[in-house]
Length: 106
Ligand code: FES
Picture 1 (spheres, helix red, strand yellow):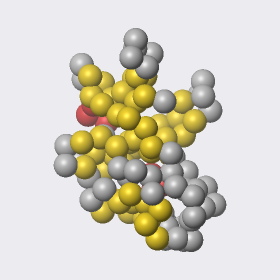
Picture 2 (cartoon, helix red, strand yellow):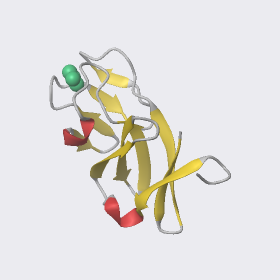
Picture 3 (cartoon, protein in one colour):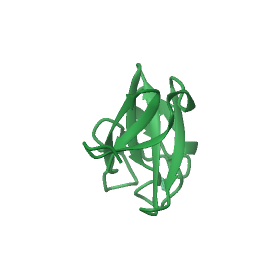
């Protein structure tokens, strides 16, 4: 953990443009995903808010992701539900690259 509350996840090269990678933080028992779109990183909950399918297998289109299970879509910038059946938004986290590492603030 850095002084400003960011935690390293792994090397920057692990998340390529227009891709999503899942991470698991055992100390928090937390699954999260990191996507890179337009050169920016988006960190968000690992599991869909509907019935908890892994969103890393979803379809990324720009800054939206569609769950593979029942088709809910979310805005990765805000976590907002764009189309159901999900009704609850996703947790989103601040993400950055620092000295070759992807870091998230939890
Ligand atoms: S589990 Fe994602 S839409 Fe149902």
